[in-house]
Length: 197
Length: 273
Image 1: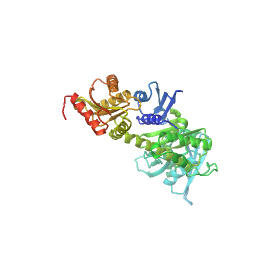
Image 2: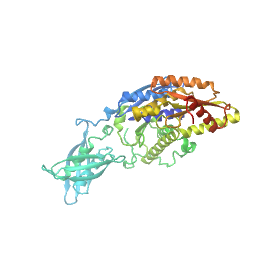
Image 3: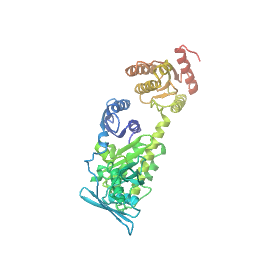
Image 4: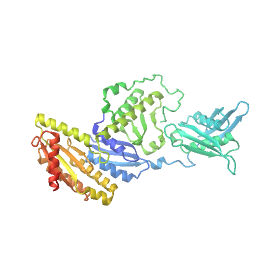
């Protein structure tokens, strides 16, 4: 079990802006040796100064290393691993949408019977899960909007845990394709690289 | 390592057949009083989980209203920037291998979130938010306890009441942001100057107090010298005055000790109550 002093040190370090993770390594005599902080979205040198001050209040010798995760957290470029739409179809008799996706050489298929727009999104999410990707988002809205150049579809997805919605917009040959493309447009920016395993 | 979040549908295929035990951590909780739940508990829970399922690694990702996103890794290890980015911002419990039933991961995450919140609540209740030294409530109870020990066993301690000189002028001329920063630096200087077992507290806007344990008055000079030295390194804008009282010599009543130290402080500043 950690000592109360180490717990408070870690609590103070985690209270610094942008600190995601803390590692405290000790010397054999129990003194703090090296503190490593993982920081996102903050100036690492400024955080290091603040952290060094806090650590010095607990240990005279402890050094501080700050690793900046900001670059790693940036949305990946279009060249990065992404899910591609292979095909869509809509069965007018059964009202069933089918979406086929291609990801890293694998094919995922999803179905939904919720109409062309909602069904297009639901089938895309089902296909992503069929690809064993984790998709911790749910559908908030899907609408097609009138523009001088056609009827693109706008999809709004919300993470399970937070309210920063994802928006995707796309226009395909039909509503199902537009919905599927807009869903991928939203998700391809955030699907974790870990999903690629 | 993949996301194993209780909100994500896993289709029930990752359970290893051991069955979900809703009170898996009850025995651990029973060993701790609510006042002991803290960051250490988060690591204990992760360790228990790792042992139970022979996991190579566990990362708990929490989203806390006060701290923002927080990641904890088994054994207190660092999460590399790349690993943090891979995990992303979705709160959850990540296990390698991914064999833990989602319900159990949900229980782990809730327990960790609770422990972090309780630790923060406990820390906030005892500390001044600006300077991170003890607040008035903590100081009052520490003074009462020290006075009681002094009355019963004759153990000596010294109380220092400290007032920043001309601090109102600093706030008025340089602004409250700089004033706050100076108070923060004064808090740091106080923490650097006390010995283990002493209590440094902010008891008012620009008023501070220190309880020097096992001190019969002479130690106060050493503390004040250290404080001046540490303060000079941080800021030359701040000056302070000190009034002291010592128990049991001056009194063993906390209120009286505080009154005596306060009166001496005002005497030094050339002021009267």
